[in-house]
Length: 279
Image 1 (cartoon, rainbow, N blue to C red):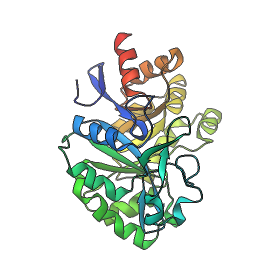
Image 2 (cartoon, rainbow, N blue to C red):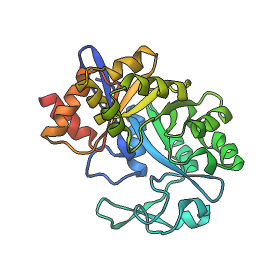
Image 3 (tube, rainbow, N blue to C red):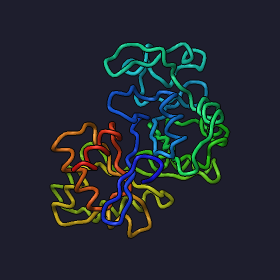
Image 4 (spheres, rainbow, N blue to C red):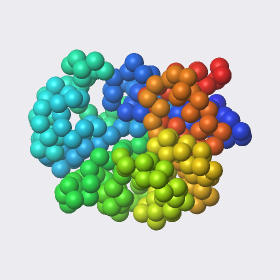
């Protein structure tokens, strides 16, 4: 077994990625302890990044503070001093003692202990290119340089990701071509091959393509192997996100394994691994 959480099926290894830094469905999101643990274990971990008002990035999913933190208002207007005063909320919305992490904090955290060479920390950029200032982009390379070998930056705006890529030599990237209406549109047109070609053309430097698991499975039901088509172009495929483990999601995860997904994003890596291993 891989040092992180993974499964071997059909002579193919599929990583189970820790969505928002969660090893278990009971974990709160973006905690220091889980991120450090995962990086030491060689796990694949995803955290989201939002630009803040001091030309840098906060480890947050939403573009407002209200749901995830003790604060309120847009993340993009908050200065570092203000973000340092905030605390994260748990899965029930209660304020915890966990501080809001900034991208700069990760270098300090990861420098404190060994980081496994196979560990991957995916920084999922939630901002579009228009919202990134030259100073935001210029600050990014120094923030990730201490752990650059383990970083992959992804996002659904290929131009935004490319701006960080061009500013940071050696940075690995990924691309998510999925939008809210993508699956409905693909079911209407059935043109899954064109969707894949457009994704590959939009992000030629991406090493990982992130596809919603329901799109992968809809293509499979229509007779098109989306994972195979992307892998044939030299890319890897992450199928996102299995949020909970139940009979329905287990059936979907088993099919993703059979299709040789390189990675499955999940909020419950430990639970999903146990259920699939016992099945």
